[in-house]
Every structure is written in C-alpha cells, then in structure tokens.
Length: 134
Image (cartoon, rainbow, N blue to C red; front, side):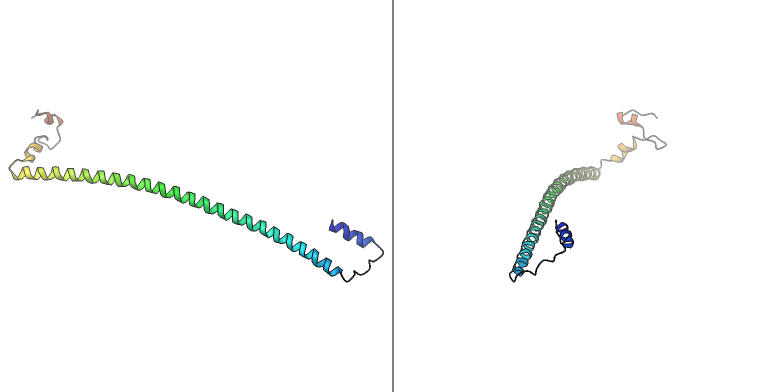
C-alpha cells in the first residue's frame, strides 16, 4: 500500500502544500503506533521465547528425573547382586575353613581327590562312583 501511495504522489503534478503546524504531532502519533506495534511484536517474541525456554526446562527436568530413577533401579539391582555374591563368598569361605579344620584333625581330602584321577593324571569320572578302571 505504501508503494501505491508513493507512486501516486510521484505521478501527481501538483505538489501538496506543507503540512500545518499540527502535522508533526501526526507524525509522532504514527511513530508511536509503530513503536507500539514493534513493542507488541517484541512482547509476542518474548512470550514465545519464554514459552520455549519453559518447555525446554520442563522436558529437561522430566528427562533427568526418569534418568535418575533408571540409574537408581540399576544401582539397586547391582547392590542386590553384590550382596548375593558376598553371601555366596562367605559360604564358600566357611566351607573352605571346614575343610581346613578336617585336615587339622587328620582327615585327608587329598587321598579322596587322588582317587578320582588315573595313574597318568587324567580325570576319570567313573571313579566318582567308587569304581576304579585300574
């Protein structure tokens, strides 16, 4: 529309008279209208930016909460596995101590273990049942 007005003014052979003294106020009002429009545009832009920042923060918080919960679940599972492994290790150590105690009383487990192998040092599963292939 502004181009249309400029082209119409350029085609007009008669020049318009100078504006009356109150015309600068009209220009200021037009300028104020433009300022208000730009302020509204900036306000809309600011609102959009604030909305996007808030959405980013909300999505980030949601992700971090789910990530923390997932890490907590994995750590608790790992803790349970470590506790189970620790109890198994304690049982194994107790069994080994009881074997050492049996050796102290004169019971030899080496004689029992030696009966499981053949003369050439190979393991013979038949010896587990008490049979000998000798």
